[in-house]
Length: 221
Image 1 (cartoon, rainbow, N blue to C red):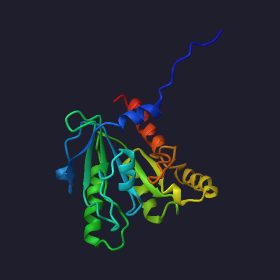
Image 2: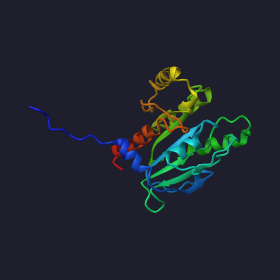
Image 3: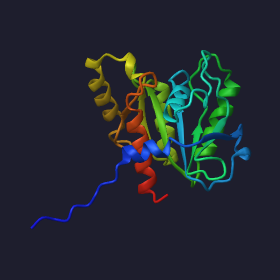
């Protein structure tokens, strides 16, 4: 006797539709007191300066200028919030976090950004997951490990997204993925799946959208 077939959700298509609509900048916060009230589900994007975070956000949302790209690392100095689905009917907020690890940044500014990030991560009920971007050409650097430690201490669910796949030899990609899986294997807050992306040719972008759509479904939002 055959079991009745249950259609599985098509998360790739759900992700495509989720990011096909309007996406607009709605808020910027330079300190914790300026954060918008929680409510709408949020996902955040973090990463070392020059990891390609702005390019990824633009590719993810099918925009060219949603997030500013610059040849000068460290330009994002605030938590920038974007409403997916329109400001008045947002299905999801995307949060662009300040890049970290830029050597030319003053110690005072680094300390200020660190406080902002820690205050945001601490007890933000609407934050579903942080997507931590790591440069796929090099793998995790010590400064990335520090961010992993912070996320674990904050008990915030996070998922690794490797960037710049187009600049990594095909023969090296599996090794980079395997090393990243090993890196997070025993970390309590890490989601076990890693996505390898390229903002240039859109490889992995559909997979990332699907992961976000699945997250929303599983959280019942």
